[in-house]
Amino acid sequence: MTKPDFETPELTLTQDVPAVQPGAMEHSKPFVAKAAHQEALGFPGELVDNWKEVALDKMSDLLKTYRSLPVFLDSCVKCGACTDKCHYYLGTGDPKNMPVARQDLLRSVYRRYFTVAGKFLPKLVGAKDLTEEVLEDWYKYYHQCSECRRCSVYCPYGIDTAEITMAGREILASVGIGQKYSNEIIGKVHKIGNNLGLPKPALADTLDGLEEEVKEDIGVDVKFPLDQSGADVLVIVPSADFFAEPHVDGLIGYAKVFHQSGISWTLSSYASEAANFGIFVGNYENMQKVAERIRTAAMELGVKRIVVGECGHAWRVAYSFWNTLIGPFDFLDPKFPIPQHVCEFTNDLLSQHILRLDAEANDDKIVTFHDSCNVSRGSRMGNQPGGQFIIPRQLLRAACNNFVDMSPETTHEHTFCCGGGGGLLTDDLLELRVKGASPRMNALQRVIEDEGVTHMAAICAICKSQFSKVLPFYGMGMDMIVSLHQLVGDALVLDNGH
Ligand code: SF4
Ligand code: SF4
Image 1 (tube, helix red, strand yellow):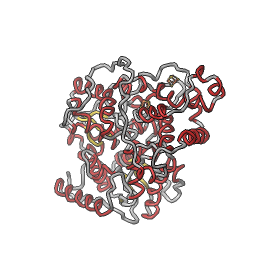
Image 2 (cartoon, helix red, strand yellow):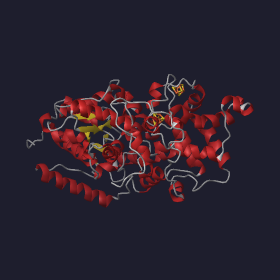
Image 3 (cartoon, rainbow, N blue to C red):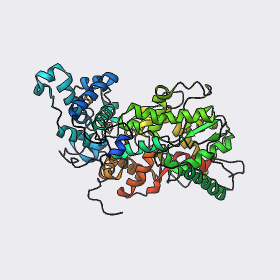
Image 4 (tube, rainbow, N blue to C red):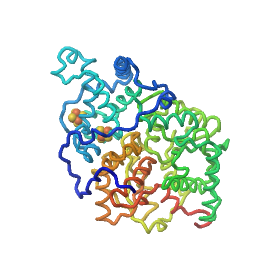
């Protein structure tokens, strides 16, 4: 690893609030999307001449479309409860990374152009003109928010900074200043079907290779079916599951679960991506277009159910938005949840004693669990409140004899973002990612010291990729992070006794 040009935060056993360091992350901004990346998504290729008019028109549209947006912009009382709740503020000390300050970037312009007081007495109400400098600040600091919603848990009014960030990013993309990383990825999904741009033959080869690998490893013919018409279940996974560590071990885990359950399943080459980066840009049309591929694939393959793999924001989009985006799902079997998370799927089979786990298989590990933001605060699982926290832990306890939770102010709905969510998982934002991970790293360090934790499981592709990258910055091994279904797959008792 080449020496980075920034300091990794010191690990502390308590989560300290840093001294305010104005401008500490002023230099941080992601690469701007090229014209081709923008245009593929229906945005202008570069900054339009009448950008101010376009930006204000877009803001006006968003204020009318999302009733929550003006409510959030109008209701902040500056109580300060959110100020020290953002991992990017805790990791950087930059006051513009305090959630309330991030909101104010948009709020000040909203007040100037959309409120009576702001039109006539702008200084009195903190209203600001929309200038190129303001646009630049939006670009920097709306790309220092992972849309994790932790701050909203602590806000007495439930103001959701993530929604304000999404609005800010959508306005930016609409005037021609999109983010390269997210927009390029969305374009690949529109064109090929997955974030990686992996065409069908390459995907088929990869899956064949996995079948051989599993056969060699455990001597069982576990299948990874692709485009199997008439299968019962369409499984939608993040494309990282197809090859990258530790993701692929999760995919192997799902395949073993299906194999042992006897339920027929298939992946789709047309809908070969669970991730939906449309949500990160805040753009409904792109989010819908990405999701539409899944509906089309499910109908064409004639499946009865759709199961979503380990991907945090994909699950949020599926659970919270699919019905509006691509429903109704009247062609699926109503006896099962629509959609269903792979953890729910496996947990149901375990509770019916269709599967059996031998937790001793993971006795070489002491495992903790990282709750992913979008699962924790943007969705649910199962049929009881808090199911998104209960079900993954039930699975982990069934698969591992040694499981411990991290401290409660860092788990469940209080969980800290991994630092790479919300479209920030790109190396041009490495400093932000490393610093933003520090609250999670602090909590992890505590359970390593107190409980001897050796592994951290997650159910989100972004979290897994982010931790693989940042763990070494904190002196921890990148292989500490594992897929939950890897642990399940390793403990699963198959017919051949494995
Ligand atoms: S949504 Fe998350 S990343 Fe964004 S300001 Fe709130 S705590 Fe920070
Ligand atoms: S907690 Fe809510 S009301 Fe208080 S400053 Fe933050 S956003 Fe405003």
